Length: 258
Figure 1 (cartoon, rainbow, N blue to C red):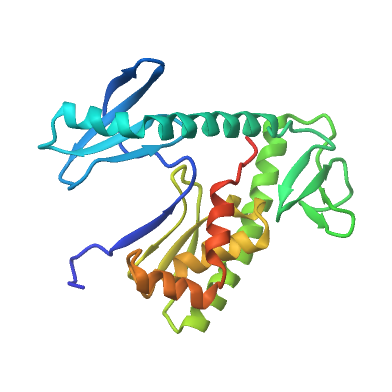
Figure 2 (tube, rainbow, N blue to C red):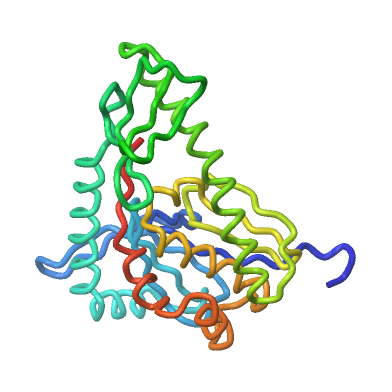
């Protein structure tokens, strides 16, 4: 890498990944209809991506609108199925919204913690045996205050746990790990750069441990292979056998609204 060259980066996108906006358009063919955003680029093929905000179509600059319509016609049933699944997922996410207050439940490592306020502790304290997070806040405190205290505690837990898991995977793979930082990005679970730095989402601690390990292993594997080719996935397999199931499970994860 040249001295002035920016590090290569590769990212693992989450369910709500949002690429740049394109021109708004509508596909309609009988009862099959949906809105989409069209983005032109130097790519070689037409791609369709669905996130929480829109159906996004990326196409080469030289492709005609008629050709794009033909691809959308061929894929319309698939798009409509994905939109239905997206709506189901968003309904489930709204159903799981955290109602901040004494006794509310926080998703934690694949299970739940009950938040207990008015406790005689200094700072937030985990009672793992009781499945509780003890907080020295008044039971009637403002929801924003409770959310802020909980996030501060959870970020510290994530910093310690994710760093330890990344260091373990990096040692096993024999790659250099320069630093692990926390992320709150909307668009990805984690990212890796070729100078040995990882960024991992602090809310990964909502997930079961195997899925946490899959994300961390995925990013550490990028420290050897900055791509998603066969050698990359073989590297992931060295660290996390059975990654295929974890990848599928991760795609189905729904985070509670904060």
